[in-house]
Image (cartoon, rainbow, N blue to C red; front, side, top):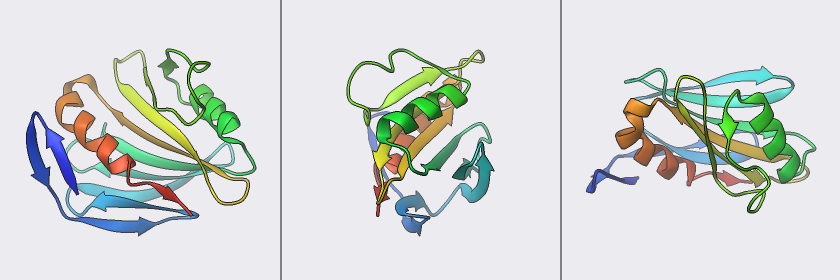
Length: 145
């Protein structure tokens, strides 16, 4: 997996993780997980940075929801404020902030059948330069099956 951090190319080995209806490449080093949880009936797999526990990447499965319904449900339950949920397409990347100034970005993708998946990543402002570049690259490897 190749990242571009502060203008420098960085290559890291990664392993394909196969979840419930999806796959995703996770770097081999420095990521703990996945932790599996269910909140409000939504199963979620979460990987947390071994360097900074405030940095995480999650995949949440919204059963029997359209991409638009899953996007709205995720945004409402996240605790973050998003600029504009009405603009663009339902699968577009959205970024929000919370009262601590932390960032949360996510996109929603249609899965097989009637499921939709929210792929999200969060990080504090002070981690934006490194993790702000790495996390979207990891998330882009997501593939619903």
